[in-house]
Length: 120
Image (cartoon, rainbow, N blue to C red; front, side, top):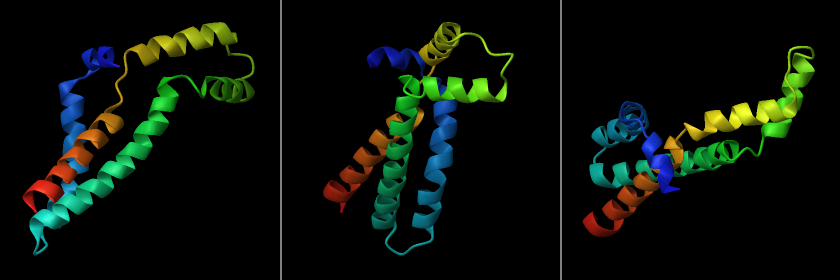
């Protein structure tokens, strides 16, 4: 698991953080109880990212390779390589990836729990 951290790109992580933290920040800024609202909305965003991260983790482990190969084979019947070549190509692409939604969901849920139980 920790070997995937070498694939972490800081610019991509920063873009993900800006996009996912924008709504909780704006919602907290416009409310009366800023810290409570920020913690609640951050927990909701963290749970949504957790669901997306689990699905993306399934994709990264290759659980949908057979389905995507058969779908691609049905759409482009003559241009598809055999399954072993397709699987090797997909595995090489997965080696370079990092699961940003799962990582950020863990961070956001931890920050939300810290705010809820320590600061409030």
